[in-house]
Image 1 (cartoon, rainbow, N blue to C red):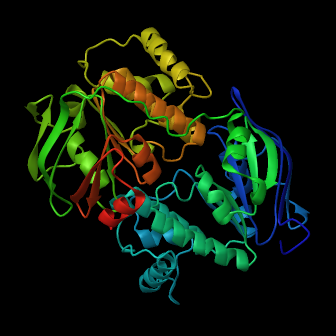
Image 2: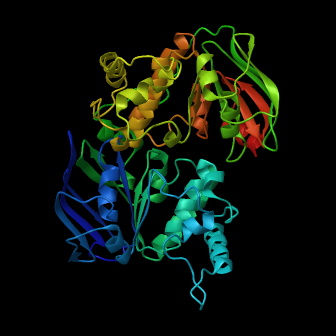
Image 3: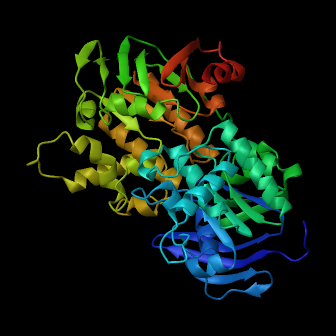
Amino acid sequence: MVSSQPLLQLEKIDKSFPGVHALDHVDFDLYEGEVHVLLGENGAGKSTLVKIISGSLPKDSGRIIVRGKEIHQMDPERSRELGIGMVYQELSLVPSLTVAENIFLGRLPLTRLGTVDWLEMRGQAESSLGELGVQINPELRVSQLDVAEQQLTEIARVLSKEPQILLLDEPTSALTDTERARLFEIIMKLRERGVGIIYISHHLAEVPLVGQRVTVMRDGTVIGTLPVERAGEDTLINMMVGRQLTEQYPKEPAQVGSPALRVENLSVNGVLHDLSCEVRHGEILGIFGLMGAGQEEFTQGIFGLLQLSSGQIFVNGNTVKIRKPSDAIRHGLGLLTRDRRQSLVPILPISPNITLASMSQLPLYHKLDLRQENLSAGRYVSELRIVPPILDRPVLYLSGGNQQKVVLARWLFSEAKVLIFDEPTRGIDVGAKSEVFNLMNQLTKRGVGIIMISSEMLEILAMADRILVLRAGRFTAEFNAGEATQEKLLRNAS
């Protein structure tokens, strides 16, 4: 640590929402040139804490001290003046604007005549992205990017402001191992410049790679702070969940049956090329690929979100036509998207978000039974341990992991027989991941076929019965359970 005085101090920070005591007298500090990792289960209060530091949420009580001076009124403008930058877990980009416009939003470079200097802005945007080691056309609209590219754009935007206090909330949740390594290199350079960094992550393996200290939160309180040398995975998990997890990847055998879903020669112009595969009842088919390999387009093509240029889809051996998502749902398919914002209606409460897919199959004149809807939703809220269990609470106010559980509950309620999970553990904690994997085991035992797309090799290797490797829109390898290794997956993916 460069200085004996903290760069940032939080004292007795308290924050409540209706029905939830999100932060309970939290103390926290950060020094120059330090990465202080912040861990906890979904809903522990981590994102709420950093949002208070960034000024996007007001505190109820407590003190915020920056460089020894108490800040009585913290808002986004004051936060920027103090040199605080934040990368949010739920991306805050404007989809209709270009990458360059998003990076310089609110501070567009101007010519001497007072007009926007588009050439300068493009050059600076390319430079900011280049520091992250990625090549993204700065003139593309953000809506044209995949989730990983959007996340890199968000990081580039914040870093271009040269913050002195950097708040990173799940910055690697959509990144490949290569992109993560590049980000860690940049974090090391920022530390050398004296930047203090608060780093939130659910990837426990990242803690010793980036951090010097780690603080664990549970239910809005600080459980403890440790130097990373004393913070082994078992210790951290026990602090986070308050119990021992018997196994992080609890794969259980299931009876594999006949093909539930088969695609033949599926193509999307310029992206996917003659893809053929099948998933059987009771089977988990893993698909692994690096960023941009075509994973998202593959799921969208099957589910009717993207027009196919060729190919056939078979459900239980019968040819089906899927032109829109309601067709896919009618044929017993469900899709958990990698970006949960595409799946949720954030201003609606939990109950209608859970029943949404099933309601789409009812006629327009069908009368809603709100009491029955709440009873059905309540069962899944209890089963999946969605917190807080308040059915009329808009999902906008739930943590990322609990939002993910709401989407999972939707497909359980729909009784889909084929589920496509695209990055199902993105942005959720180690305890919730274990719950998701146990849920997958329960589903396969009921005969559900699952396609699991993940950039986490350990998850794929542990949970999949078969693994397909996707590269540049083509399947390049297939492995049965036990045959694949991390080296084999990477070799075929790159």
